[in-house]
Image (cartoon, rainbow, N blue to C red; front, top):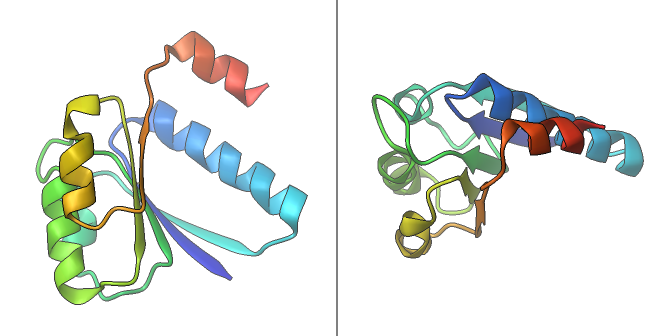
Amino acid sequence: MIRIAIVEDEESYISVLKEYLERYKKESGEQIEVTVYHDGDEIAAFYRAQFDIILMDIEMKFIDGMTAAEEIRKVDSSVSIIFITNAPQYAIRGYEVGALDYICLLYTSDAADEARS
């Protein structure tokens, strides 16, 4: 079982990510459990090393993804954090908090609709 957290404040991106994960689950036969958080404060507040992978946006309303990642790293050095954002200026800082990867989403809603097809 792979436990994945999606930390994203935009519902359209949450939907796309969940669809990609569902497709991976069907193609691989892997068991996946997905939990969604809508802001960095939701995951950081009571984090207890319960995920294998965190797919995290950076720009969110209450606590940004970088700050949330710093808090998560204080209690979990092994979780794979992947920043998924449309803010390329934060890429270097992402690696400073031990991110596995940094994926820049610079596409429009039309591209998101096409990706779902």
